[in-house]
Length: 119
Image (spheres, rainbow, N blue to C red):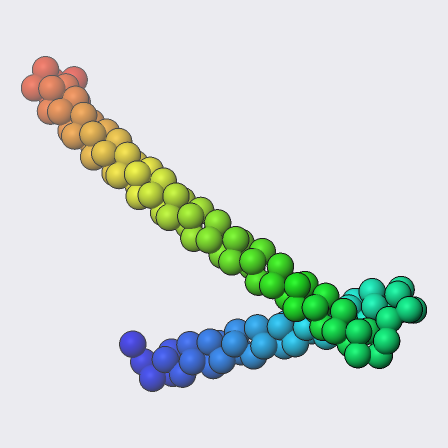
C-alpha cells in the first residue's frame, strides 16, 4: 500500500469524524432550541425551573437520538453480516455452476470428438 493511499484514508477518516462532530453539535443545538420552546409554553415556571425543564428536555432528546443511532448502527451491522453471507454463498454457487459448465462442455466436446462429430 502506498503512503499516498494511507494518507488519503487518514484524511477521509478525519473528515468523517469532523462531520460527525458537526452533526452532533447541530443536533444538540436543535435539542436546546426545542427544549427552550417547550419550556416557554409553561409561562408559570420560574427562571430556574424554566432552565431545568429546557435542560431535561434537551438531555432526553439527545438520549433518544443516541438510542436511535445505536439501533441504526446495530441493524446496519446485522444487514452487512447477512448480505456478506449471501454474497459469499452466491459467489460459491456461481463458481460451482461455472466449473460444472466448463467440465460438462469439455466432456461433451471430448465425446463428440470421439464420435467424429466435433471439429
